[in-house]
Each structure stands twice: as structure tokens, then as C-alpha cells.
Image 1 (cartoon, rainbow, N blue to C red):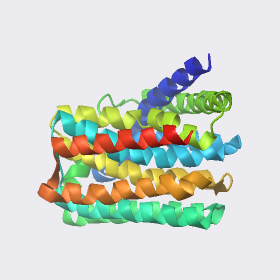
Image 2 (image 1 turned 135 degrees about the vertical axis):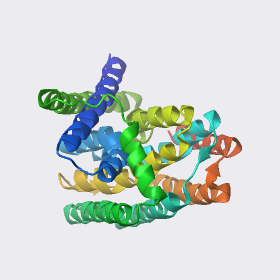
Image 3 (image 1 turned 90 degrees about the vertical axis):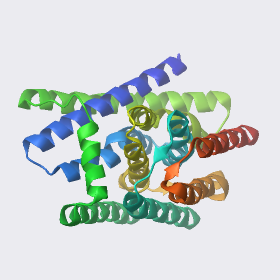
Image 4 (image 1 turned 90 degrees about the horizontal axis):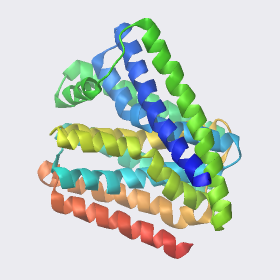
Length: 317
């Protein structure tokens, strides 16, 4: 029964995230917000909404292990599983300027999180600092896009334009936003509660459940977006979505979660998992820079690395 509740929670998270995102874009367009800033928001909040709501719900219910595991596990899945799977469909072309800016900042956030892990956890004041860094990065990116309007700006606008099914009328927009966030909230409650029960029944730590089952589930929107983008030959958008999501998972998701309570790191996350996350970010940059694409062979390498990571977790159980 708990597996059924977990699946229902994931479904509500995905649907709720999609409805909330489309409603937010509809509202932004109605308010005449720049397409570039909409694209930046889509890359961050759009596909990371499930991680955000699950993390806040986990912290509020005292399941901080799920919160930390979810964010770190989602970044590992984004980099190794999702980009690997997308590259198998079609080599993922990388825009050099977008990679230099967003990819470099993604690596910085990964290093920052590892530093916080060695510190022992994320306190409220550190969460506020992380959110301020995210806002500053998005504002700086927006200024760069509007002043120079280079290929990176075009990419961010393409991200916004790729999102279909955007409501136009005020009542429909409100319905999408309210219904979306209701689905996110209830889905997160079901997911966290069922994940805790499954972890206790299996005799494993909640952070392991967060790293694997919860992280994979909340990463499904990124997986779907990447597969669709690769199929439509918009592979630069697939790369941008993953880079933006990885940044938001660390600064936005964990930063917001820390406002509701201190986020301690478990021992195995400090010694193993955060370094896997950092290593995947370090490896991804030269892969993207070499030839400015993620080839099918490199996709196989990423997928193999993710499989090895999951196997290593099962050995630890």
C-alpha cells in the first residue's frame, strides 16, 4: 500500500509542478515579464518544484535526511542519468557561452555544498545566504541576457517558448497556479510519509531513501524535459535545463529548506555522496567542453557511472 501511495505522490508532484509552472508562465506573460527572465525561471524553478516542496515537507516533518538526500541525489541523477539518457537519443549540443557561465556556477554551487557538508549542516542564516546567491545569479544572468543578447539569451528565451499549454485567461491562470501548488503540497506529503514507512520497514536510513527513490522520482520532470528536447533536436535546451536545475536544487531547494529548520548531513553523505555529486559536476564540464557536445559514447559513460553509484548504495545497505 505504501508503494501505491508513493507512486500517487510522485504523480501528483509531477502534474502539480507542470500546472504550477504553466500557470506561472501565463501570469508572467500577462504581466509582460521579459521572455529571458521567464526562461531563467523555467530552468530553475520549473523542473525543481517537486524537489523544493518535498524538501520543505521533509523538514517540517522532521525528516531532514530525506531533504538532504533528495537534493544531492537529484543532482547526481540529473548529471549522470538524465544527460546520459538524453545523449543516447541524440548527441546533446552545448552552447559554449551558456556552458561557461551556467556550468561554472553549477560547479561553484557543488563545491559550496560540499563545504557546508564538512561544516556539518545548513543553518537558517546559511540558507538565507544561499537564496541571496541564487537571486543574485539570476539577476546577473538576466542583465547579461538583456544587455548583450547573445546566444545564451536566445537559449533562455527558447526555454520559455518550449513550454506549451500556457493558459491565457486570468481565471484559467489562477486555476493552474492554485491547483498546481495544491497537487505539489499533497503529493509531497504522500511521498515523504510513504518513503519514511518504506525506509523503516526495510531497515535503511531515510537519507538513503532520499538519495535513491525520492531523488529519482522528483527528477522525473527533468528526465521528461530532456528526452522531449533531445527528440525535438533542441539539445542545447536539455543541457540548460539540467544546469539550471542543479543550481536551483542546491541554492534554492536546500536554501529554502534551511529556513524551516537546520539541515544536518548524515555521515555517509559527508564521506561519500556529496563527493559523488561534486565529481559528477567536475566530470561533466570537460565532457561538454570537448567538442561542445555530450556524445552517445559519453552518454553511455554517464549512465554506467550512475549504475555503478546505485550499485554502491545497495552494497552499503
